[in-house]
Amino acid sequence: MKIDVLTLFPEMFSALDASLMGKAQQKGLLNIACHNIRDYSLDKHKRCDDYPFGGGAGMVMLPQPIHDAISAVDPQHKALRIFMSPKGRTLTQEMVKQLSTHSHLLLLCGHYEGVDQRVLDMDIDMEISIGDYVLSGGELPAMVLIDSVARYVPNVLGNSEATTEESFSDSLLEYPQYTRPQNFLGVTVPDVLVSGNHQQIERWRKQKALELTQQLRPDLLDKTDK
Ligand code: SAH
Image 1 (cartoon, rainbow, N blue to C red):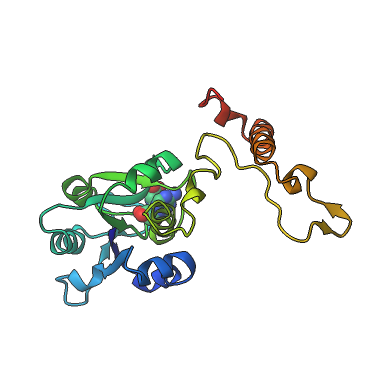
Image 2 (cartoon, protein in one colour):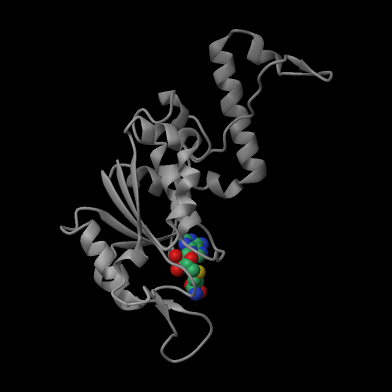
């Protein structure tokens, strides 16, 4: 999967060089290219923001550098172009799965008070929010999107089962997990998990997933008939 990121702060994306995302990039499963919007500014001081027409607090990102950056990076509009924005559709696991079927994404990260509306109208396909709170820039939201989507790209996760059994995969939260030692400070793991009976283990996990979801996120159960 190819992901082009347009940002004023490309250095923030070094976080994706670590762990799973780092490995996915090294293996060539994920190709993330960060482009500095400032490089496309035609202003002699490379300015990328200005005061809002009509007044008000903060600065607004200029349309020209963004439009030119998008046109250079995705000249034939082959990518799904996404603007990270608190006004967008809130990201869900369903959307993550759907996005992972695209071979090319372009993520635009806003900063300051936001982006001139005209370039969004001209060049952007959809807006995505990572939740009902405001961050200072779209870089962290873009990294959240990339991480969540990349986990569905084939071979990014070592174990292909990992995305099918985890939280939200069937509108349930995941069952509790345990590892060694069997007895930790006097607390033992549930007997069924060391019974070797896979059917019983499966039933126990399903039951626990249901109980946990009922307790912590009953709203998710409205979406499932399980
Ligand atoms: N003034 C804007 C917020 C600007 S925050 C408003 O009230 O709607 C600056 C930038 O951070 C935004 O342009 C967007 O790219 C990013 N951002 C902030 N919160 C976000 C969120 N919850 N999800 C996705 N992007 C967000």
